[in-house]
Image (cartoon, rainbow, N blue to C red; front, side):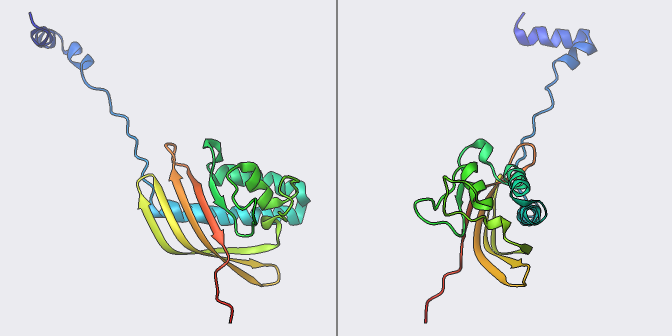
Length: 189
């Protein structure tokens, strides 16, 4: 008897045997990122920046550093390796921050390995608003480009040009894998 003939015979003999040969439910690996998830991640980044600023104002450097560690773990994908991070106010030779330690130094300062960092996130920021010019959705990745407006405790607004790339992980988490920020370019008159 051939393999196919044996299977046919088993299926005729026992309905229970038929169930054992059914295919398992397929594993669904839908990692497509949505515009709503991107917007939520951007707002999460703003909330994280403001939380670091507030932590510094109410609890000093140690509280701000602990908060920044949590924000970096949640917002950025450093657990997978280097992140392409070019912060707004960095200078050569430490312009790029591909490690979490470099990002933490930028956000809160206080790291002798990054002596030019004064703690961008510990400034007295009160509001943070994202204005997207472009959102591109590419499966599990999304790119955004636009501006972020930051208002300090005196009402002064700082606008930065911001480009982000986000990844959607299998568990649904959205994290930053590329972050480029700079002050808007203007021609001197």
